[in-house]
Length: 190
Image (cartoon, rainbow, N blue to C red):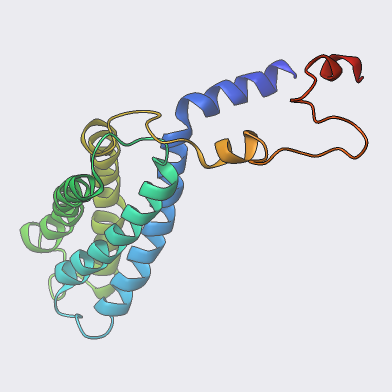
């Protein structure tokens, strides 16, 4: 293996959870954006903070499933109901952190129509709610998930462990004794 591949492998083994967390975050970011703008441009056009909060709640549910089953698959240490309660408590704080910059932009800085043009309002909403809010919440969630929700490393076996352990039944070789019957034959093959 080349030194570059070894370096990549070392980095991946050290930061694989963060990389998976970021990928899940990207998927959830897209889900949040789609739901947010679908609501904001239709039934919640007068309530952008509510639209973003609702979209973020839906993305949080998706995030729990993806993070639990993929990003932090090998972690655990808690009973499932306790883990879920902590996940959603941390996520509730994250939702607050996510919508806070949008609230400041809209209501504290008055970056809304009629004080600014519609394009300025929409750009300010996107930057404050979807970019700044998401980044703040993401950093908080990564730290809190690893610290409180999924604290113990390697408490659950990785999915591939079952595949690597081999078959569950003995392999029967026609005309030869099974390897477990004659351990010396394993070294003779080969």
